[in-house]
Length: 164
Image (cartoon, rainbow, N blue to C red; front, side):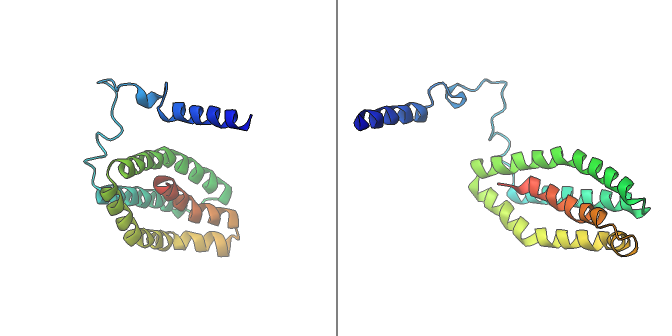
């Protein structure tokens, strides 16, 4: 009885591996964009720069919203709305990042090298940019929740763009 189970299991695995009925076994239509059409030609370093530029952009928008030092709950709401508008943008960058990994490992390595060399600098710059408002909400107001949203929100968005 045990051998029959193994045979059935092996047959099921073989059927699964041949892609019986899987979307990947269907021919691509001329209208459907190929997953690698744009990403093969994409430069890994250029994509990494775009990811970090989008991160810097959200940090700048965060600083603008916090500059007037509104009440913490109001600022948190504004920041959450801001971060929600950036999440799909970062998710789109992640799609391109992962497509690059699949299509062109060398350029993906270039993207990772650039991110490895420059990501920390951008995160440090975020901290420098937001230090005045972080000090205000942390030391003068004692609003740790707002400080957490200010400091972690942009970093979480960056993580969305580069998750693997």
